[in-house]
Amino acid sequence: GQNIDQPTEMTATEGAIVQINCTYQTSGFNGLFWYQQHAGEAPTFLSYNVLDGLEEKGRFSSFLSRSKGYSYLLLKELQMKDSASYLCAVRDSNYQLIWGAGTKLIIKP
Amino acid sequence: DARVTQTPRHKVTEMGQEVTMRCQPILGHNTVFWYRQTMMQGLELLAYFRNRAPLDDSGMPKDRFSAEMPDATLATLKIQPSEPRDSAVYFCASGAPGQHYGYTFGSGTRLTVV
Image (tube, rainbow over all chains, first blue to last red; front, side, top):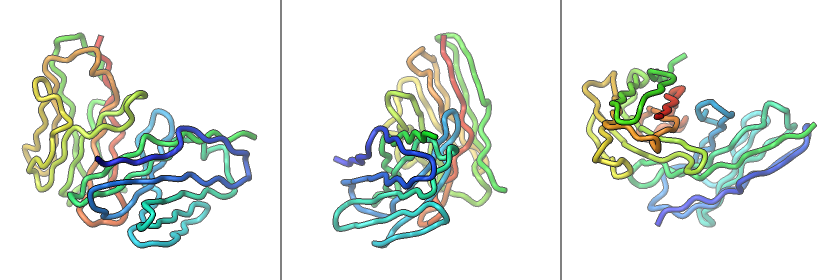
């Protein structure tokens, strides 16, 4: 079956760095996405990885290892507004998105 | 700023009533997803269209749910009859195969069935 695993909840301190891991087993691979979802709002696109390595975008970076079925989202210089759920999703061979359950990130002052 | 438009934003209805949710995908996007999100289940795929053709609706309870794309600018999700367990947020998302900037979600329809 297809499966995406990510931690349910993480806590970090304002100004610090946090890494949210995602492991996956899917039928084919056509890219991995990270989305941010604030409570009561729609998911918004953060990053996309299709080749191995690190993609950096401002305070956020995303890493992919296809051979290990592994990705992480790295958030630097954490701000209170980064408190949200972070969803990992893999696009499979049918171009469908397989979603993880999301990681709720709590930022403390 | 291109956006996916969903209506209504909120819907409260009585059990047994028909509910229709609408989605206007971003112009030029040929892929449309309907998702349901609850606290317990996360994001569940209900239906998936490409070029208006349904590709996957295996996640949708077919006895009461139906999804259609009457034209490229409109996708609908209908529940008849509605039940309290259908209470959730329903999201529509659009995109194009192979794009690297992800799929864009609408603001969602928060459905409450009493």
